Image (cartoon, rainbow, N blue to C red; front, side):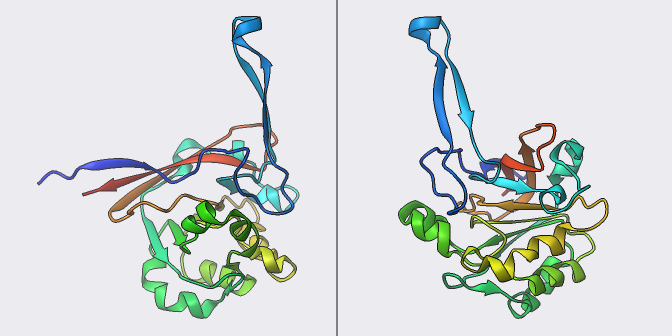
Length: 226
């Protein structure tokens, strides 16, 4: 029987009214030229790089790191994805004890998508989503590195890899994954993981290719097979 493929969005549209972490300003989208006056419409978009569905590269946290434009197209394709449902409480930090039972799944993956179940929170309670989501601690980040030689990216359905309510103790989790020489690891934040991801066979990341940009919004597509 021939397998059928389906493409699904794993990212959200960039929304000027969408939720965002407290330190991130709202994007603006304004008319520069209009059809009525200028015969064509042109708009100006102002947006912080950590808005909506976005990726972090190593240049986000270290001088001399890798920028978005340093990635090749094939390095943004992942063919061994794993989706993990990890239900935690608001403001809770992921520790190695949460990950140890998942070791057989993680050790062969090239990308792991952690679904905390906060897609509904994003929709129904944006303030809670922006400030109270769970995130990873330094020890959990190190555990991921120690238990998979093939892992090249992780993604999640919350706005930050770190626990925003406890950034003082968890922001350095980014450094654990990214602060390495010639590091091409990617962190994907605020992903849309709301659909049925059974049979997810491939993940493709399409970032904004802007020279000098270390992190930024991206479009992510998943391919499922049935």
